[in-house]
Each structure stands twice: as C-alpha cells, then as structure tokens.
Image (cartoon, rainbow, N blue to C red; front, side, top):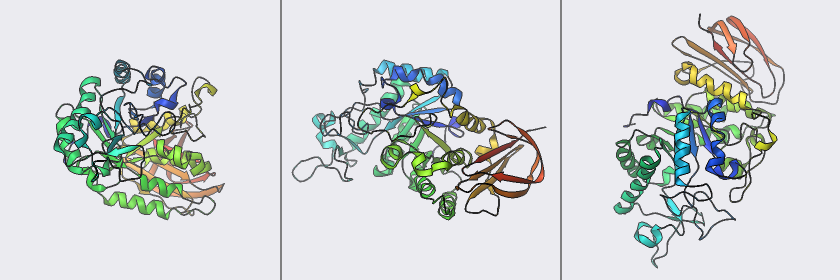
Length: 424
C-alpha cells in the first residue's frame, strides 16, 4: 500500500452508529449521551452511517435508505444540525475517540442536487435518462469518466474534514468506484489531514488506496457453519487466503453490521450459542473488530432499514448487559500488543472442527485464545506449548492461573477463554 496508515488505526476498535434506530429521538443530541459509555466500553472509532439527507424521489419505505443521498454537504435534518454534528465530533475527540463517516460515492438518490445542477455527472442512457446497474431501485449511478464530477466529489469529502474535523471515511461498495478515483481522493485529502480509510470490499487491489477492507467472506463462512456437525475448513481456508494477500492487508472482522442485521439476521440467528465466541474471534485474531449498534444490549431483533425501529436501551439498567464483555475484549486490544501485532500460532486439539485455539506473542506479551464454536458441551483437551508458561489472567473473570507449558481445559458449547500473560 503506497499510503501510511495513521498510527491510531493500528489497534482501533470500530463501532458502527445507526442514528435513526439508536434512540427514541433518533438524533445526534440524543446519541451524544451514549458517548461516555462507549468510550468506557473501549470504542476508539465511531463510524456514522451516512449523515446526509435522503432523497424523496424513489424513497423506499417511510424514511428511506441512508444510502440514497440528496446532498453530500448537508445534514439529514432528522438527525439534527451541522453544528450538532460538529459538537458530537468534538465531544468524541475529547473522550479520545475518532470519527469516520460513511461515504456513498457510487451513486446518489434520484433527486440529488446534482441531478439539477450537473446532470452530466451521471451515467445516462440513449434517451438521457439516469440509470442504475446493480438493481437498487432508489438510486442512480454517477459517471466517473467525468473529471468535473470527480473533483466535486473530492471537494464534498473535504467539506466534512474541514468543517467537522472528521478523521476518515468508511467507503460504501468501494469496489464499484474506480480505484484510481480513490487514490486521487486519498492523495488530495490526506494532504489536508492524515485520515483513516475503510473500504467495503474484498478486492485486494483496493489496498492501494485503503487501510482496511471488509472480511465479508470470513463472516459468511463462519455464519454458515452447522453447529451440530461443524467443519472449520471453510473458515480456515478463508483466513489462509487473507494471509496470502500480504502483511499490509488489514481486514475488518465482524459478526453483524447494518446490512447483516436487517437483511440476513442478527448474530444470534446466524451463530446461536456461539455468537459471543465468534465476537471474541473478531477482536483477537488480527485486523480490526467492528461492533454494530446494540450488540452490547444484546440486540436480538432485526432492525427495520427504511422505518423507525429503535433499539431497546430503555430495558437496560445503568449499563447494557454485554458492556463488561466488550470492555474486557476491547481493552485487551488497547493494552496487549500480542493481540494486535502477534502472529497466530494454531493449537491442536482432539476437536479440530469444534475448537479454535491459538496463541500469540509480541515481545513480552502473550495471549491464549480458546473458542468452542460448536453446540457440544464438556470438550476436554490438553494444550502443550512453550509460551504457555507463567502467570496468566483470564480476561473475562479476572482469575489468575499458573501455567507450566502443558495444561488441561474443559470448554462448554459456545464458551470462550482468553488468557494473557502477567509480566513479572
């Protein structure tokens, strides 16, 4: 990759914010009340789904799709004002968090301001009609053969860097946009401020412009496992493919996001009792982990995409039930270099299709991860490894154990064990 990744992104914990569904009000101001909790939970990067207004023409449902933008340099008034967004960015920065925004560069809504001011910015058919090639009926495609459109797009992105002080972009369906545009955009905008760039794609070529790309294939492989008769082969094969892409190819791992939750089901529908074990995997294997709005509740419902369907925070006590779970997990990434920089050394057990076990080391830091991704209980096994020596703390319980190179474990269905070496 020809660009340098900003240092804070190397161990980032990303949290996707669905403003519409986050609170009863669905506003920036209402969301702001959650900032201290999210910072305490270990979130370091807030990714806001598109904050721009939504087109009326072709709108799906009552409220429409976030991804059918009508103006790249305005705020959706359902969320609040530009000044309120700036205030949220400032408050996040004060708490040590960064802010990135969703950027939809492939298409706009059908009544975007450019359709009137610059219709030549769009791909048109022989009759002069706007077109769309992916089957999304509420949007129209932009024309990347038009250099003036490219310039206007970069200027719109720069607007939020200059005006709000954002720290980067999550780029929607990045592979549908020519790679040379993203390189041009990054060169231009990183000169204003070093930014973090996350691509929703799996095309390895896009690492020429982006710091991180999605691990969609991993998520699909892990989500398709039959927990009664599991086979880890598809997951391991995909992880090997990622490794073959090179050392500077950082992946984003997740068990849920806005698309998955709304269209394919919650993590509990996909993973059942193993949902938390897979969440542990996403935060310990390498790359970056993503937590979607409400996973810490935990949220067991599919959120409507085009209608109001708020998360059930009101059912919680002071903290969501999984706040401590995510805090332990995300704090480990912040404090233990083995998780972020260590190489995964796979561990053999008698249950190769039920247990994922690996150990990681970086300098004086060692982390052991054991995950039961099956519905089988009481899986007993022994681990032998030279790094498994010394006093280790189980990060979720806080209990400490003295390991001497060879240890016995028993793990229940969906259980997860993470130990870190306590330095002398």
